[in-house]
Length: 295
Image (tube, rainbow, N blue to C red; front, side):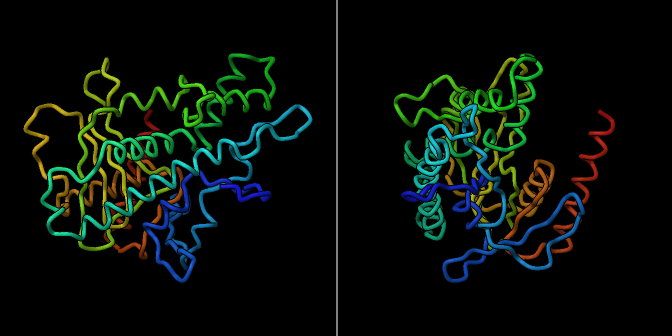
């Protein structure tokens, strides 16, 4: 987020506040281990979260002369959402360490759920690849539109969240939020730092019903020990289920497999990946490559 007269140039599409939950904190800095799915190798040493998952001026609109339009406006709106979400995640971490809370049917307020839903949805669309796809689509359907115009149009219609009153509530993100509204929330926890994430965190399983826009389930790693799950509410009994549940080894492996499949390029973890984790990731990426070739 911009600070005073110093605008933000390196704009993170996976926020640093999120990656800190998978990092080793050393003083004021946070270091994270990373695995490159292109080379299928781990980086020998951990890296500062400041130095990953960003592009320069990723969310900036420009005039025809190259000057900025409302510089850092989108970046700052994301920053406000991140601040609220960071507080929610910190609260979940504290509650996950409290035996009483582990048996509660809910530990999240409606506001907590709203911030988490907005945060997760935004990460799906603020990704550079998604933005680039929008630009290419616009230019293909509007050959006279140049790159700057296509980029501005994509950013304005894809990313604004309606946080400011003047912002359009019909953007893609606002529409996508509807598919996750009214979901049932559960939080899986582990005793060790076995949960991984990626440069495209979040897993969605599509509905079996092609006419239903609501996903069958969503999984989102919160920290190296916590995973948030969202399910459609099917019946009243489901509401009485404990909010927290201890993840089985199979559930942990499933998360690692799906994170590996969804990753754009980089996979992140608090510790260097174990041989078992490396095997899971390599098998998942191999199946992904085969499916892409066959498709």
